[in-house]
Length: 127
Length: 211
Image (cartoon, rainbow over all chains, first blue to last red; front, side):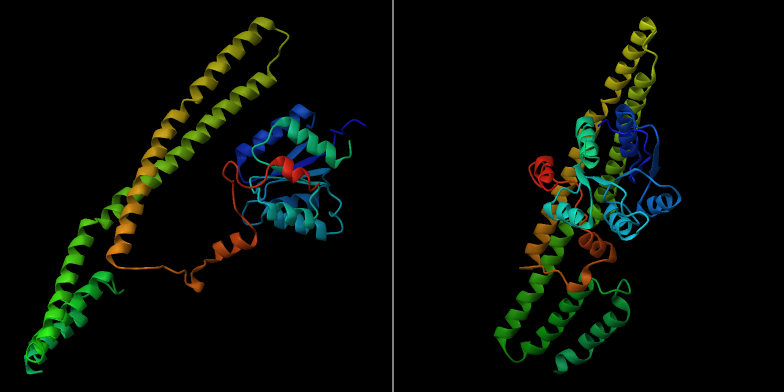
């Protein structure tokens, strides 16, 4: 099954350059409908206004981290099914386990490349 | 006791009332007070016990030596000059890497968006943008030099702190339980470790095993 690249994607990162990198990589993969947020609070606000097909979030942000965003998303019945990928420099085992327990669909360590991003998105959608 | 009572007690009282340089008690204040006390007791014990008198004299000399040695460490230079300079170097590194990243990304984006059907124009554009990318990469040389300066400052700071710890005979510094700031507590609870060093943390392959 081909990847559905028409879904709206929300990229959450407080580092504008990283958003730009992910946006360009997504563009290369065919995703054109990409929104962005600078932290968990902004992301949650956007998610309540629009239904996203995928959230790609950093962990280390203020005031709301990606981990807190993930937990909020999973505890909100209207958002809980949203596929969620963590893209982060936080590569300690305890972080990966915590994110997995909180319901993350996949986890990518920075720095990463386009094939890694593609394979994780495909894994999330079962391709 | 008559030897110390009037003049020396007056000196101590005067110091406690007026001698301190600031509201907070500094190390210098403590040393100055110890010096005054040693001088006072010296004259008092002189009449009673020569051994104690000699011991007090030794203490007074130790304090005076320590003051001289601390002055030689030039700790205020670190605070007033070296550390602020290191901060500026780090700010400049952040600025330079950001500028270079933006230049490289803009060049890449222009190449990605260019019309490849016009071969000549496309080649010219790619050539021009590749030069921009090469030029932007020169940031590495400059940031490398800046980082070396920051590392030198950290080494100097480490050396002076180590010397200070030795001079003050501080055997072990323990963290007070109440020292953790709200930001540190939040970082600990939310497991904000930041990037790991190469070979530390877990690899993407290790992570994939969890999914």
